[in-house]
Length: 636
Image (cartoon, rainbow, N blue to C red; front, side, top):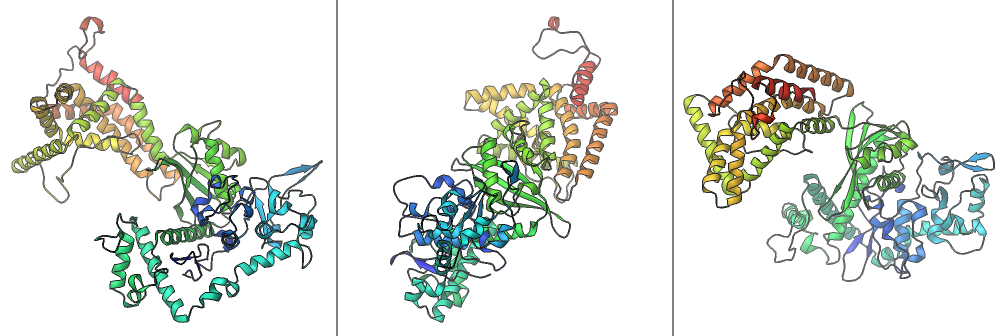
């Protein structure tokens, strides 16, 4: 890894900050170093009369049609802005599907091969469908109409019919364009850099700087890999815990004499390389390195994207992007690529952010072969969803809903269409809320469960073995968590007697009268044959579909195997419908007998709880549970 060797002094009392856009890897072209904050950040630059006096590398805007003018920045930071843009390189989306424009009857468009002819300066704006010159944007001096005037610097050139305009823009040796180009080259010439000229660092000081930087990079990489926070609430010298970054750096210095001799207390006050700004810049460069390696690995091959939107702890809407592609070894790779801040989650906003993202990283939507989202209307809407907006530009970008997610939504959605099953899940949620509402009730549940297991082991009713009889609790079901309803049912069946005892304790000795009434109501429903029947029926049904759900989540799963598993699961459900009734009734009756719940005579007349017999059609318990419930739920 090539470390950040150049630096710029902010002022005498601040640290020397590494130049944020210096390349870390020789394999990465300069035009590719882009911070994740590029996307959707054009609003950072506003049309204000007051000149900007600060600049951060994360504020670089790749699309030349959306950039602010250099004159919008304060004169003291213009060279810093120019250096950042020049080191990043021109925006050249080589694989973009350029738009056609008609000049009379002749269609013309931007040609990607022009990037090869004028690669040092030529840029293309996706938003304006126009060409720009990076050199003239950075150092354009008003020379009238020479080199095309300000067209290539501000407004953009799009008269594709006259390709000679590009060469005319370059002009002679002393043209405005070539003067601007030479200024750009001098800007990054370290020998002419005023900081180097005044500092004249010795070889020893450069080696010390390199050691400090590598130490900070190693600490950052470790924290990123482990997903740990960097900062501490008190990072002063007298603090007993300065946060993970400083504490780990001190540990590294204590175990490495080379690091200890030049870091922390032994480093110059303005060159410690430990400030939050330095930490963020190292993270940004590492993120840039990773993204570019992934893009190089994808190359010119087709790929798919998986997108989901969420709101972070600071109440900001974000869009997460995951790439799915096949590497050179033929292996399917899924990798997280970026989180992009978006102003809202409408389909149009997400599409705009995605276009900017593709443009920044040199990707083309024409190479997109698949797209996957959740079931929200703004994502998979037939007419104006993100899926539809992409399909209008690329018909080959086939939409595929996550099979496991879709299965979960379908099962719970369909099951809740039955009133009794909806009541079952509602009661399970109430049980989870009231039993797990306090630490005292959870402790009581654990104690009763330990007593039950101990008694079962003594009587031989419960088997012992490795991994058996582990401490557990009532699991809460959630519509967005795969298999959560199945796991919730299993935990309730396993801990049924302990849960009933806790509910009874709350009913008899609870301090909150509302909770006592709620516990009494839940006990009335839980200790009924109907509840037990529905509980075991859904356990069997969700158990069959849970195997399918787990299989669909495998990394090496393919659509052929997935469809085969769907057929197998449908066959199992059909078999359960045709011949699973007797085994289900036997299981339910045994459970009721064990927990002292009254069983039913299936030939007796069914009576709905709380309803008068005169208002209900006369039918047997067998007809109700087998036809109205068992067949009805499976046939949904």
